[in-house]
Image (tube, rainbow, N blue to C red):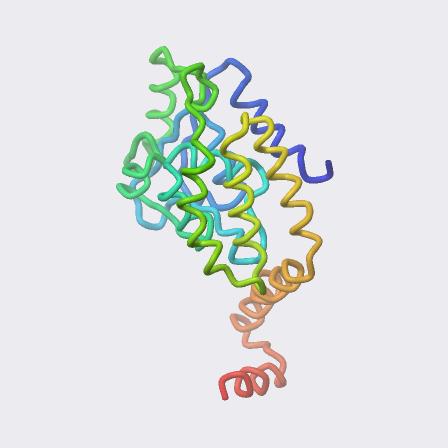
Length: 230
């Protein structure tokens, strides 16, 4: 319940009965991407430096605000896996082709294009909330995910947890799916692997980059780096 309010807020946004458009003019990664996925329409500035992605697996976590459920429902099971498991980021035409973005815009025109959609009798329903939405079959999901499970490294629990979210969430209603996702997320975030990866690959790297820019790295850091390279 500590982490679930964001997921519930995005769900409330997409089911409020009002159309929601996202105008994306920067990097929408992690929670920013999950918020954008909760919109009914996404306008993305056509720039290779601007894109959407879910890089949580790179720091030992998983997208816990509906990302493991909306993404496969939007782009398909096979297409979602590199984004979820490898932290891939999609920009421009690639995002449009995958279904992450509905429209590309020139810089400075994204809000106008989003507003134009809102004023065009916009539909306020997500695909998975329509009466004709068809849930994928469990055997179909198993066939795609089984090879990835076989290759998964148990020392890195995040990809395994992401596969669990997809496998157990997709056959459910969306409300059940995001609750399953949160239960798996809550277990994952308490594991030492996630805490250690966040400390080293995110917090520690941020500190390292900041000190390096100021040419203020402690002397022992270069010794450690040299030793690791041996």
